[in-house]
Structure formats: C-alpha cells, structure tokens
Amino acid sequence: MKKYIFILSTISLLAACKKDFLDTQIQQNFDQEMFLNSGFNNLRAFGMGVYNYLPQFNRFDGNAMLASASDEADYARFGDIQNFNFGAWGPFTNPDDVFAYYYRAIRHANLFLEQTVDFRALLVQDTITNKANYIINVDDFVKLRAEVRFLRAYFYMELIKRYGGIPIITKTVSPEEAVTLRRNTFLECANFVAAECDSVYNDLTNHYLNYGIPAGQTVGRGDAPGSSDISRLGRVEKPAAIVLKQRALLFAASPLHNTTGDISLWQRSAAAGQQIFSDPNCSHVNFLFSNYRDLFMSQNTTNTLTPRKGANTGIILTRPFSQTSDAFERANYPVGMTNGGAGATCPSQNLVDAFEMRTTGKPITDPTSGYDPANPYLNRDPRLGFIVVLNNSTMGLNTNNSARITESFQGGLDGIGAKIGATTTGYYLRKSCVENYDLTRTNTRAKSWVLMRFAEVLLNFAEAMNEAYGPDAMPSFGGVPFTRSARDAVNLVRTRAGMPAIPLGLSQSEMRARIRNERRVELAFEEHRFFDVRRWKIAEQTDSGPLFGMRVIKNPDNTFSYQRFVVENRVFDQKMYLYPIPFDEISKSNGSLSQNPGW
Image 1 (cartoon, one colour):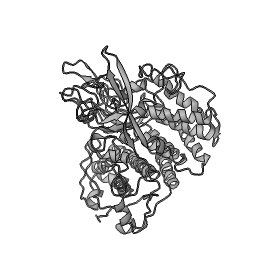
Image 2: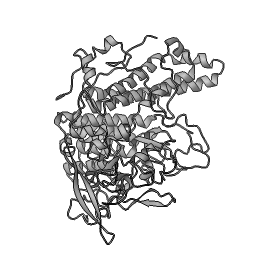
Image 3: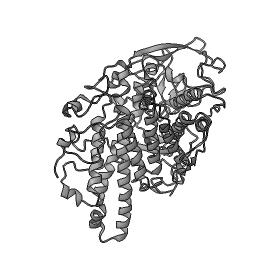
Image 4: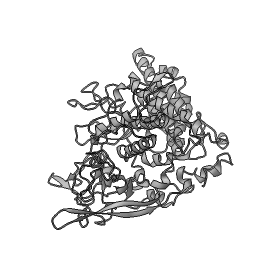
C-alpha cells in the first residue's frame, strides 16, 4: 500500500498506545491487499483500534492531570504540567500538545472508513459458508463504522476546544495535499461535529447488551447476569452522539467563540439537551446515580459499576483501562503511608472554597451561610469529602487493614513539607482513587475515565437554557417544547448531591454564577474546568494570580487551626485562551496554516 505521511507530520500511522482492553495487535506495516483480505477479525480490530486515542486524564508526565493547570489543583512534584502555570509554553513546547496525536487518530479513522466502504463484499469472503455469522458481522460492522465516525468527530472536538478552528479532513491525504490545507472556522468545525453526530445516530446501537457482568454480581448493566463477554465494553452508543453534539454547540455558543452573542447558538445547544431527555433511546442514561463517589472508581472487587456504563448509572462514555495497575493511587495517595503515595495532584483552596454550605445552600462568602472559619469543613456540600482528602479524614489502609487517618496538619506524616511529594496545598485527591488500598500490597480494581455522564448533560442544558431564555422559562424550539428549565436541570444535580435547591427569583446573571459554580464542583477533575474558564473568557481572573492552600495546625488540645496561604502565583495572558499551533506544523505548511493570535 502506498505509504502516506499524515498531515504536517512524519509520525507513523499507528504509534504505540497504552495497552487496555481496546488495544489490538495491529500490524503497522501492512499492504492494501493484505488488509482488504485479512478477514472480519482483523478488519474489526483495525476499526476498534481508533478507540485507543480516547483521552486519559492522567496522561501527563508523572501522572499529572490537566486540573493542575487550572485553579482546581497544584502538581506537588516536578513536571511539564507546571509550564502552563508560569507561562513557560508556546509553539515550541506545550505540555498538552495533541495536534499531531489527534490528527493521527483522524487519519486512522479516515483510512478505516475509506477501505471498508465495501465491507459487505469483504466480509462475505470470510463468512461465505456461514450465513448467520455473515448477518451478525455485517450488523456489527455497520455499528463499528458509525462508532469510528463518532470517534473522529470526538477527536475534532478535542482539537477545536484547544486550538480553535482547524482543517477538517475526511479522507486520507498525501503530503502534497497536506501542505495546502487551510483552517476552517470554529463554527464550521462545531457544525461539522454536530452534523456527524446526527449522521451516525441511526446506525449506532441504543445500548449494547450482555457485556461483562460476572456471575453473582448485580451492579452495572444488568442485561444478562452471568455474562463474561467484555468485547463491547466501552463502545459508543446513541446517547453519546447527542451529548457530543450538545457539547460542540455549547462551546460554539460560549463567549470565546460567539463574539456576536448569537442567541440561536445557545438555543441549538439547549435543544440537543432536550433531545437527550425525550429520546426513548436515551432513557437508560437519564439517571443520576445516588453514590457520587462510586461513579469514578470501584471501591471493592465486586463493585464494577464504573466501567459498565449505561443503565442506572448515568455514565454515557468511558475510557476503561487496565485493571492490573494501581499507578494512579500510588501517584496520588498521601505520602505518610507505609510504602506511601506520591501526592501528585493536590486540590486547591480555590476549589475547596467553591463548595457551598449543605445546610443553607449558600456560598461560604455569604455572611448568612453558616460558614465557620474555625471549623471550615463542617456542614459543607457532601461532594467535598468525596472529591478531596481533608485533614483527619480516612484514606487508605494501615498494614493491619484498619482505616488510615490522614495527617495533613503541620508536622503530620502527610503534612506540607513532610517529604518530597507531600501536599503543597494541605489537601490530597480522593476522586477517581480507590480509597481502601494498603500500598504495601498489590491492589487492583476495575477503572475508567468517565468522559460523558448525565450530570454534564444537565449542566450543559442549564447553561444553554439560562443564556437563551433565562432561569425559569420553558418555551419551544423548532416546535418541540422544553420539559425543564435551567433551574430545574441544575437542581436535579444538587438534589442528588444532597444540596438545597436553587430558589426562584434569580436574575439571569445570578443564575449564570450558580450554574458555573455547580459545574466547578460537580465536574471537578474531569477536564472541564480548564476549558470552561477559557470558553467563558474568565481565565484571566481564575488562572492568573495566587493559587491558595490551607495550612492546618494541630493545637495542644488536639483541635486544629487553619491558615489560608498562597501556594504560588500563576500567569495567564490573553493569547493563552487558545493553544498555539505547533511551530513544526506551521513551518511545514508553506504558509497555508495560520497561527493563533499572540503566538
């Protein structure tokens, strides 16, 4: 097969990916004849390989997370992620430079789609003696081709929320064609993503059945207890297409890209949310799971909730990964444990301050909220304890199997400065960590990165509805009536969390502030905050200036005192709202690819 060099890059077609259940042993130097005649399993494996490009939240150096490049957290060790915070990044070096990576993923998808247009004829060669298998394989391939188109749209979304408008490529291109490509506008790209989601919707399954519920377990999908088939675990279903459409239109409507304040863009995003609420093919994901903590990590060997997205969880799209590694726990557990953790991602006081009072539903800055600075964690939003490891709370196991108390007070085993990697903020990360580990042993749990879930759908919808119609209106769009207001949607999320409802009577700007704060809390450490503050054009306020921590002091009577302090001062310039196009890509484009402003 003719060897193409991908767009503005000489990176090989299938660079090595981290192994997980979606990884496949694909031969990297194949020729066209072998590929077309390799049979159903290899053709399917090549398409399934596109899943390997889905993001992992701990993909940065030292298990760092993008949260540490926002006001959510600080990275306690030395790593590239800190370059974001000090302005030490640009076209030559970017800790999150995914330009070539996602275009490689797009080329993988394009090649698969091009070479399998006549998949029915290709498959009949492999199943000619078994008509039943042929019918099953054709059905699977129709779905797989739709999934690959969805994934291609997903990768475009990952690119445009970082770089703005980029070239839209729906076929494999030669080196000569690559250097002539020009950037589409952001709105053209967002509309492309939305249109692709609409196009593949009918061919996607509404939900896959019978995947991987071990005998004797009842949590998760529940379609066929006793099934051990995990071959379809994590595959795309119809609801994901609508959520991606909703997300793309939300970004297009936001101030960073909607410079004219076009209300119709907010209306379109709201309508996509309403589609999720009313479409019977999405009914199984219209659900807010009651246990917030267990949405992100199985806490025991029998609870396999997280990877088994779908019915009764509200999880819509995941990136499952190895069940044989506890690297994330070892990277983030408190440092004072025997064989202790590395405390990499340390939640900030900025984030902790965003959690309201459970008793009144008011922010702690409100003098009538009931907040007590001398007892700062009392009666706070329950999600605070599920997301952040607070001083004197349990996290992990002692070697005798008892629950371990975190000592993040000054002079404690986990305190600031206790050792290299100790918390820099006074807090450790709980969300997405299995909590009951003894790090002297090898522990494993089923794990996934949650890429889409119903709470995000509700918050996307609430934001779009408020901007288009205000807090409590429920009009119609395109002849379809809305069934929830902005306030209704955000209150569903709050009620599940055990928080008081947002009351009637708020102005649009007041509701905007409440919705933005609810996103900050509910979606913390899920790679939303970093991009939210950019699309809202408030990053110069949130990501520039001091990042705060809390110094905890243990008193002689075993009570604690608290001192807020500045961990570091950060830098954010106007040009940083969009990533720079990598210098190598600009230089190879012969002037056809323009750079983002300021870079």
